[in-house]
Image (cartoon, rainbow, N blue to C red; front, side, top):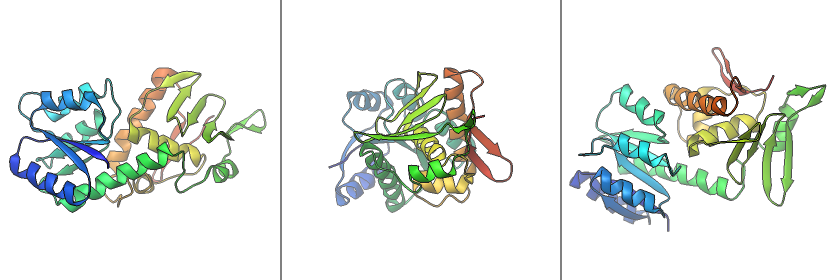
Amino acid sequence: MEKLLLVEDDDKIADFIIKYAASENFGIRRENSGEGGLREALAGGYDLLILDIGLPGMNGLQLCRELRKKSQAPVIFLTAKDEEIDKILALEIGADDYITKPFSPRELFARIKAILRRCAVSNSGGLKESSLPEAIAAAHLKNGGETSLSYADKAGSHTVKTSRIEINFQRREVKVDSKIVTLTFTQFEILKKLAAGAGIVYSREEIYVGVWGADGEGMSRTVDVHIKHIRESLNAAAPGYNPIISVRGAGYKFEEN
């Protein structure tokens, strides 16, 4: 049974989420303060966290910021404000998704299941949508006249490797110039999708649908924020390195020059 941690101070909202979780066969624990939620989250054992932004004391944004120092567990934010600044800030500090109050439990749990499905696929070493053999066929990364993108399948390991970056899907590990790059769950999924389809231009909506498993209409800003952070993380490991190319009016592609 998959376990959820809910950090929500509103009893009515917490009660209907807990009841719906039980009907969907999820284990769930509730904390009603940011401090208590952080302690419980760091204790581990949860597959996904549901965090309210407007918590007393330590709010949800502060909780997530502290959590991200030690854990990359998937996070969905609940926010009462339909303001873009709150949504973007939530993504900036490492949230995987957000949902604005009022919301239906069906929509919330559809998003939860989509994230957990991605976790299951990644943990099993499986691939979605474009296969790596297709990626090799599509790749046009050249280094001395040879394709620099390679695919290794040894003992269940799925790896995209170029002259500078190595992405191991099974270990969920990224290295640039042999330096480990730390990404959130969603950031890794976006990089994996782009790298596995190297040279292919993906629209923001295609990226959103491929990673979140939901309608991507109107979610371009969400994708942009995540890609901004992927670039920052890659650049921190190797200054000036940016294999994610913006294609004006079209989207993004993975390409090493």
